[in-house]
Image 1 (cartoon, rainbow, N blue to C red):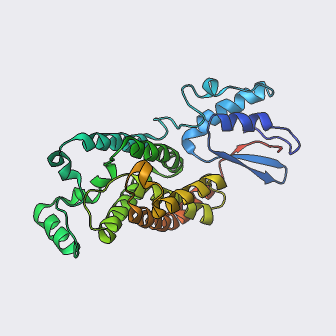
Image 2: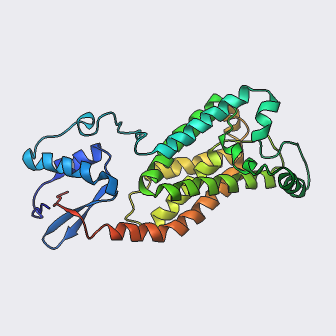
Length: 291
């Protein structure tokens, strides 16, 4: 462990850690400041960057030299495998939009168009056939290139942020919960069967991040204000029908119910995440940082 005085300038170290996309934060202590590693999987890489800094305090490493093959904006498959698997399933679902109806029908929420009282018929159908995968499969269906591109970009961003900070099981649970709730919500309020897309779960991711940002202010999941405003504007634009001409008919009830489900999930997860961050503090990598 290496300690630094409070007046020691470690801006180069902070820059290199940020460039390497290594989750960390600095806290003020009585005799200096402490660098906390927020993800135990990153500890070895953080120490590597720290050791380079101790030998050459003025050396600024490019991203490729610290973490080869990693982009500043796009997380790697190694750090967010579930996110990229979900993205691949979404792309496959987009390919199904070119297939005959009989091919994509098994992935629809319910295979028969209905109006009026939809739930008794749907529930009886699922019980009779055991086709419960229909609760989740519509999340992977996409009806246009713009649809999968918009959702894919949001998935890599929101999903990447969450997967790097949450246990993989908790992250997968978030996706399944918000996807199912958003599909159920859309089908309940708009009894149509030919809907799909990751956006219901993505608004769930957004809601989860907002809840954690509110309840765990020290979490690195905090979204910049422009991201929050843009996501809110997209939600409102969809409700008002402005995006229908670009992406196609929007499943607005999926977005609203997914957002609510994600916020509830985030409120449930936040206490555990807070304790997890606190539990990491007794084994810090010590360093001072002057802003």
